[in-house]
Length: 177
Image (cartoon, rainbow, N blue to C red; front, side):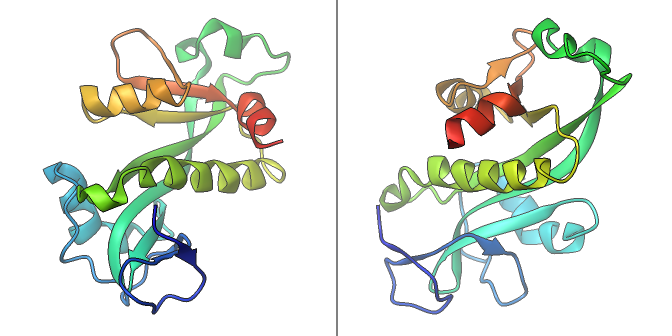
């Protein structure tokens, strides 16, 4: 993978670290091959920024080549897998961190960037969990290919076949240790 650098303006081929989406970023060339994910980053992400989700982008120069968004939410206790319900004192609605979208440009040179984006998202979620309650990380896979990505990252689908994936926050914290 290309080297990740700190400064948002650099030579092509080098990548920025994930930073919050701003109007500075060039979204026009982004194409992950999935129209709903392309449309969201190009037409809705800036309007959602800070109100509904936070979007982080990785760029080559100022051209976005990957992104993810995270938000907080809740899930009814009865909808959680049994191993997540066992916690004493769990309220009727469990707090969850949601990875709403995660995508990388389909260009072969960015292969592997999805895992890097996920790692950054999980680091941010762990940081948040030190200050507010988070029971697990929740993801809704857009299609079967995305579902396989989440399975490969050891997220657990529940209920089976739903394309909804969970990872307990304790598992995330252990993986980061």
